[in-house]
View (cartoon, helix red, strand yellow):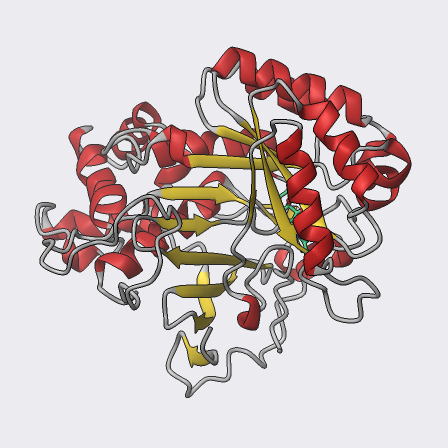
Length: 404
Ligand code: SAH
């Protein structure tokens, strides 16, 4: 891990970071972000361009620019009549999120962006380039209402839901950054999979693309259900309908909103469901994930097993290891016995302490023992490599502070 570097996303003439956010009351708390083509399916985009007096195929042209070439500037759309470009782009590609700051670490292969919405709401996304994949971690809400006490986003409460297009725009922005060659390949490093040989240097470099999208930024995705599901479709539908990223490479992470998990099960999507469990017993989970007071561990897991059965997708159980809170050997055994025999994978996340937190990550010996006991139950488990720690871009640290 290298020292982080800070680079303003916009020319430094204007001190955007210090500018106060537009008061939500003035911008209209109820105001919605402007309509964008990524909010619409292709049929609705055709209708929208027709309303502008343009032939319907312009919707496909605009969609290819946005989803395929990551372009939203009228000047780049040379296949559109010069006279229509500004009107079409103005109506269907309004600016949604403005990059306010960008921070990099891990030799430039991890980059966090702080975005400002039309109303001043702040959200963050993180791009992580690995030798074999590029993952975009996106936000689904500005803030979060779930109030998990160990999570930075949970401390500030919910500001608002993001629109479908505001979610998609984070992925498109990451794709554009990669296509522009702004994210280095990184030094040769040990592959995540030690069984794979390291890439040989005369491999032709593949043009980097966003391969994975995880809804693990700010917010509770299933509390913004309709926009998140629409965003998943836009991200995964083929160009020009959407971006063409594989559904299997998309992960939706939830605190465990059981009715919404059930609804997701019937969507016909093959995305990975991640459940943030963090405790195998209701007594502790009631405090770590307060929504557990409404939907208990057993109900959440039942919904997860249904999801696995219907979709055939392995459910990911997220478990932040917190020293002396949830990392006891007996909790590992209890977790192992709850999960054994199911289509599941456990992701252990060493806690990233939030500022002022009394909690910290587990001791290495406790973490090893936790892994060992889960494995003894036959449960597959990995410890997550937490990228972006020193730019507050690691799991649970996204708090969208405009000032560091
Ligand atoms: N609301 C969703 C998605 C956002 S958080 C959810 O809870 O699943 C993505 C993951 O980071 C969740 O598993 C969350 O519990 C975890 N996380 C939050 N704060 C963390 C922290 N301080 N350290 C480690 N993981 C954390």
